[in-house]
Image (cartoon, rainbow, N blue to C red; front, side, top):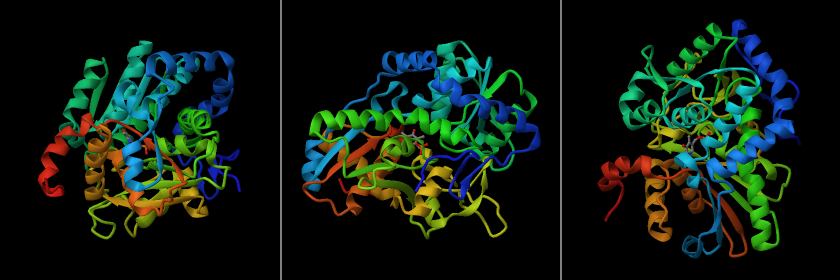
Length: 397
Ligand SMILES: *Cc1c(COP(=O)(O)O)cnc(C)c1O
């Protein structure tokens, strides 16, 4: 079975480029050039230098002894939380900004929900001296004020999306409208393995540095480059795609994807796309999507803003359909408790998104001889207010 994208931009039944005709030239230009650009040795040299000296890669693969003891197995944490800006998203924005430069684009647009991708994009634009416009739902701007201020501090213009529910999907519509109107000088940086082909493949390639490093690091530590399990949380699915990438063809490695169940998959407040979703089109690709009978997008819910997305990238829809990856739905409460657990056992406060991956440990029947790699996608500083506000609800002490 093939888990990589095909010529037409499909992963099995999912993917493609379902875009308005007026966007076709922009997407086509990117599709025609992205592989040639990425494979160029000069591009790779610049990308690798920045990943090392600016982002801080390679990130450590850390043997979490006390966490391992608790689960009576061996658990390594891949420390994406130690990247510059505190999560894996910067791997992708640095990659795409270098692509944009080579396509002679000097204006960058992006859309953001929680603001994390907006910050990572604004960071990359400041680094390269490019103009940066970030579309964000008006409601999200109110909810995520610190990230709005971070983007402004970095020199970006944050434009409120005032239509519809004033959240992520409305910001996405605005970004697409902008790109249609500015096809020549503008590159649209998408923040996960979503969007029309070639975005899902391009983003997965940039994030694949995660599993590339894991293989080398695990080999040095254990003598084998293959773990028994790789666990990652899935919003759109970019950190999971990066953590799975170089293990996709090693069938003996179990790939575990943790989705956000919110208040529970049947509660009406959930973001568990593989449980609740049906095939549909979102953000320019065919994938699994939470939708009403007549195909309108259902508002998702998760305690973690980064997992609060009604779809998943087409690669994950394919991994789900083929059974290559196992999907688990983790509730807000489970994730919260796992965040506290990791903080107290290892002195690492994780992002709420990453905490969903930690909760997956409770649902796996792990053995002493197993070797688990858990992708710790981000750090928890951004979630401190949520940890303070919700503590009495979720914890006994
Ligand atoms: C944005 C984010 C996610 C979710 O995005 P993916 O594309 O699914 O990786 C997960 N963890 C953190 C820390 C994030 O900031």
